[in-house]
Amino acid sequence: MKNKFGFLIVFLALTHCTHIHLNKKITRLPYQTAKFDIMDQLGTPYKIERKQGLDYWVYKFKVGKKEYVRTIVLKDGHVIRKGKPIRYPTPQLVLDGVENLEEYEEAVEQFQKQRKNWSVTPKFPKEAR
Image 1 (cartoon, rainbow, N blue to C red):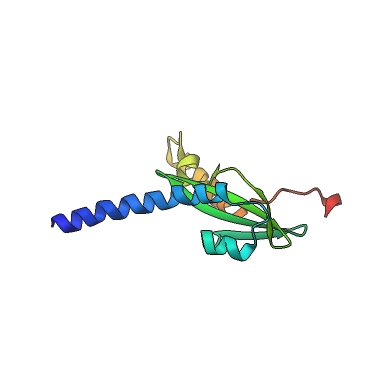
Image 2: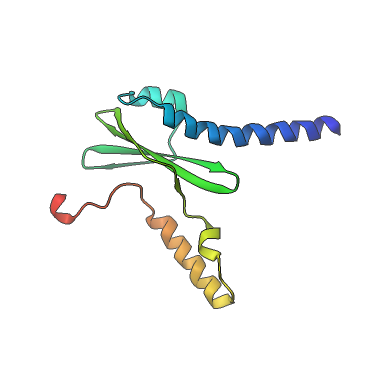
């Protein structure tokens, strides 16, 4: 029984450190790093978007119960920019302050729309497209 409990504590500690470690790895990632090296160091991105000749690679990680994302922008397969960590839309953000069933249903619908339409790429005006 002690072994199982000890294993659980070690496992939880390592998974928590992995998320924080991912954020630090992105911070330390040198500019002009090739995309193949990024995948070797960070793994597969959570999401990839391409706009205006730029690739936006999104990595998701947790700090405690909060989810964050960081974006790496690539041009011609190399890092040109790294975004700061931003909060990823979570149900808790939407449900804070809900007091009755109608508000709850509206908040859940709003959350689902946020998740569906969530994007890390900038919104370019139509003239620039």
